[in-house]
Length: 229
Image (cartoon, rainbow, N blue to C red; front, side, top):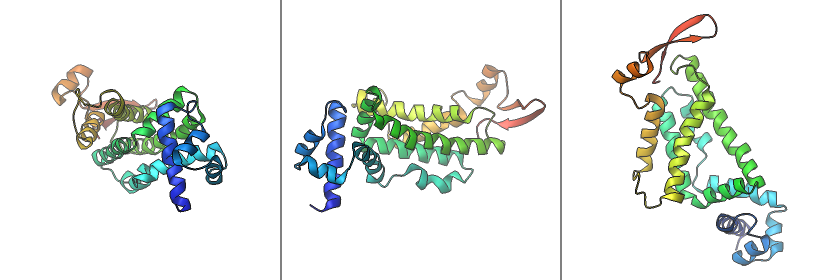
């Protein structure tokens, strides 16, 4: 087996074992046995365990040609809010469907206080907040989004996506509660984020404001802000 093939094989075996048993339940010796190699071969490809953990995240990101940020950078420069969030949502949902072991592995790492959880947080989660939060902030400055903490908007959107994905892949694999395609899920979650759930007629009565709400920005100025983007 070529060196690169062997490297990827070790990564996939490690992902499967860590996802099944957690990090405390799987050793490099077991990974080597499952891959049909010696421990020395593993350390030849990955000098430290940290190298293996980082390679796991990199491999999963590249496995399906998915880099959420690089692929969407051009779109993030546009003002098409529906397209931006829907495309990002679909990419994330598809990624989780294609990498169910990674989802389990990350939950293990968080529960066990494993360093992979921090690596994932620093390299992926924070990058998501910065990238999408920056888009929300830019649209606020353009008057398209109302005043709010951009990171709360990001958390609300990611929360819908991650909860839906975990339900599908871990809790309710038969999809008895909500059985929809990722395309439909991404579209509807985006609509909920951008438009809410109330009809335009009921929205004003419930909130006490019209859909074009007057918001005080700073201490002096008041402006009209489009709530739906």
